[in-house]
Length: 113
Length: 116
Image 1 (tube, each protein chain N blue to C red):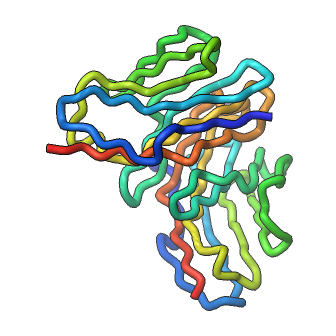
Image 2 (cartoon, one colour):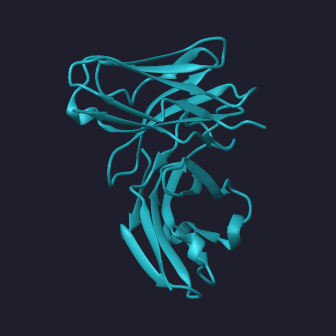
């Protein structure tokens, strides 16, 4: 079985500060890992995904995440937060033979001026 | 090109009524997914279609929920005898094919269902 845990339902950072959203996964098979972003009243948009290639994955809007097998983690980072980054972020896990993606409960990111 | 569209965007219904939610996937996408997003929670998988077939219905919460897909395109999620706990945002997504999420899932804006 697969699962994903997002630490912190709400994270608040100052504009220009480092963004760090934490995600830990559980999987008995090599995982695919994803970060999605959801802006208010919109559907989800893929930020980035890991599918067993490079462990440091770069996504859209300056975000990146690093797959660390030893720590079963896939944390999302951005060096400098922008007001437009305020949204809900979801970490998710799957694998090559799976028919569905398992989503975490989400982390709401707020940006302070 | 056009993205995934869903209708209606909002639906308010009385407890006990039936509702139908519609999803129009991106043209050419063979895989289609339905998820439910309850307040403060993540996305709950409901059902997945490959073409018109539903190989995985494991997430449907009860037999009041059903879904179909016709012509390998439009899908309808039907909830019979709605209950207040059915209130949520129902999201649809489509992808080129299904392979553990290897192909990106493109999400629609969702239908917000409120059962009074």
